[in-house]
Amino acid sequence: MGIKNKKIIAAIGILSMLFLMGYWLYPSEKKGTEYIFDKSYKISLEDVKKARMPLPGTNVAQGFGSDTATESNNVQDASENQEKELSASDLKKIFSEGLINSHTTLKYFKHLEYLFRKSTTLGEHLEKVKNYLFSQFPETEAQQLYDTYKKYLECEMALMDEYKNLSSVKSMSAALETLKKIQDFRRARLGDELADKLFGADVKAKEYAFRRADIVSNKDLYGKEKEDQLKKLDEDMWGDESKDVEAFKPDTPAAWQRFNEKQEIYKKDLDEISSPEAREEKIKEYRTAFFSPEVVKRLDAVDQQIAGEKQNEAQYRDKEKTIMEDNSITDDQKNQKIKKLQDQMFGKGADAFRRRETMRTDLEKMMKEYPKK
Image 1: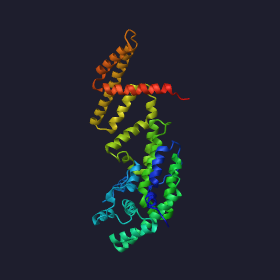
Image 2: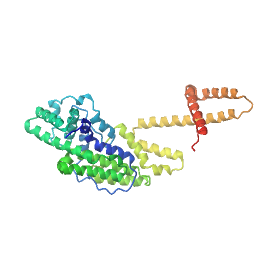
Image 3: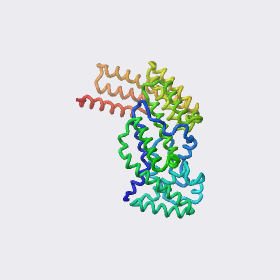
Image 4: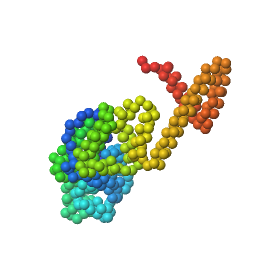
């Protein structure tokens, strides 16, 4: 069977592409797809965390329902440290939970794909993998790993052919249904136990991200309604761990994402607040839930600076208008007075302001000269 090396590498990127496209493209709608992995499956938050950690000796790692472009790059554009052979100590860490486990085996298979990606045929690729495994493991273990890897790779290649038109997945229900079909496809090829052990944590993380994003982006629901649905989603998918989902990613970038998500959850509520001041106060309340007092203080300072700049510019516009309407002076005199006013009101930022003004006036002129027909 002929195969180009890119096909070997591309096979494992299917779910990443599905997630990336589905997350950003699907509209909110009622979903009827049954859960792929609900709380009855023993896949915990800790399992997801371990499954996404870097493989010892490489940089093959994935994020919890986050930027899937990074996931794809880890395989296709991996750094040079994936070229080297793993040490005995690395292998011991990788397979400390057994040869076929839910945390490291899949990442090790991806490492093998990359390591022998230059093979021109499937047969050549598998032969190199086999020789490598038998040089690294006892015969019985090497055979088990090789047999499983062969089944895994052939399954992923067949899956790529089966779902080669993923660009057409543009709705929430279609994305979830395709995600389910992909896992069912793997279960049929590999058996439920192996398919769920290798891919369960990854698929569950993506499924959760899909369903959560659908609720958050629903423009017809108020914040409280979304919060109730998110709580139910957490309970349905994570059971006793549902209370820990929000704290699963306590790092600063995640805090910023969660702050933005909070605003999206309450977007309908915020849009209906008539007073801009009251709206800003409500957003400031959200900050305190996600950031330290020091960060909140700095954000408030930035707000004050922006507000001050807006007020300063508003005052400038009033004075500029007075100058422009003064018919007792020439245009050159008006320009001189305006330049002096800009220096007085914007100080060191006067030149930057003048550049912005030039761009603005040029754009306005262009809009008048070339209106939409």
